[in-house]
Amino acid sequence: MKLTRRAFSKGVAGAAGLAALGPMGKLHAARNDEMNILCWEGYNTDQVLGPFREAHPDATIRAESGTSDPDMINKLRAGEINVWDLINVNQPWAREQLYPEDLIRPLNKDRFMPYFDSMLPEFKEPEPYPLAFAENGDLIGIPQRFGPFSFVVNTDKISQETAEQEGWNLFLDPDMQDRYGVLAYDNWNIIHMCMTAGLNPFEPLNEDEQKAFEETAAKIFGGARMLSGDLVAMNQALINGEIDAYFTGGTYTASPARYDGATQVRAITPASGPVDGKGGVVWVELTSAVNNPDPSELAEEFLEFIMQPEIAKEVAFSEGTYNPVTNMGDPAVMDLFDDTELDAIQWNTLEEEMERSVEYGVVASYDELSSLYSAAKRG
Image (tube, rainbow, N blue to C red; front, side, top):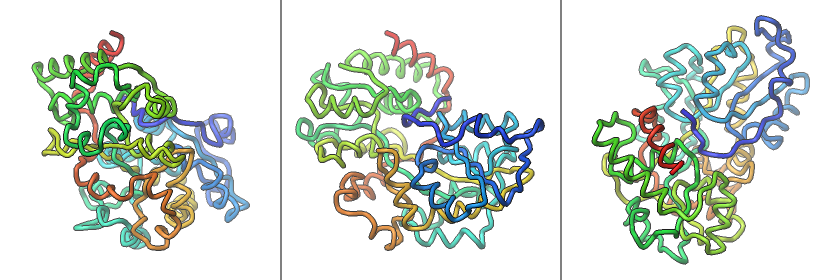
């Protein structure tokens, strides 16, 4: 299953950068002088890694950006558990796959639980973020970057209130024919097409429900004016009037346009929907310690490092797309954001949008739905 939530860029090191590996995949360098992180883009930037390298001048710090959560996880399964010290993926995987398969190890609670005190209320009340913990209570990851992810409109053409109340039905309205685009983030499209069909994508779907999905996918692709995997192109089409909305998008995709002043580009979280009454979905990244048999002492130091105010801000505003971070609950972090930056990530409605969103999860009938989706997309 591909999680194409975002375009990605390669990190500062790929396979060639890991040439120091021995024939059995063991790293020859002293493990207190080396740290390798497999991550989504942002944690691999010079703005984040540079200061950490400066703090550890005798250490080799490498990062590689992944193309999808499952692809990154499969690297560990294929033997690269000996290579990586940290892995940064979205929220369901740590608890459902990585920890049960012994691919990640528990974190020291005495060291890391205090960081939850500095997080936003959604991540510490009434209890610390549940998906950061295994069923046995072990702490298995630190949540940081997150964001609601549903669809985007031009509020000069479709009001925020109308879009929120119509929700996914907006894209089934005959008046929207040729007025919207589809941002081809396939896994997200499948999730959102399920919701448009009134289905819960995180529960197995029967034959009739799969048929409803198929019909909905055909309608959405059939009514679209454009199809692209480029969020910049989609935002530009929205701004120049080619389209009035695009299917699949959120704070992550709308933020660069908003930061540049096009605040009519707005991510929308439906007011209601088919999953426990909710129509939005929120992704949350967890960074976990890989169960490397020869662990680096720098792995947990890096986890603490990214929670520091200045670095947390760099994580939030990296790679040209902008997102909130959990430790914006810390006044020292919040003080680093100006009004323009907060408006870019729709801070004024973030709490409400989170309340209207369910946790991103694994699509239960993915194989069947992917086949139906691909056929509709080709059509």
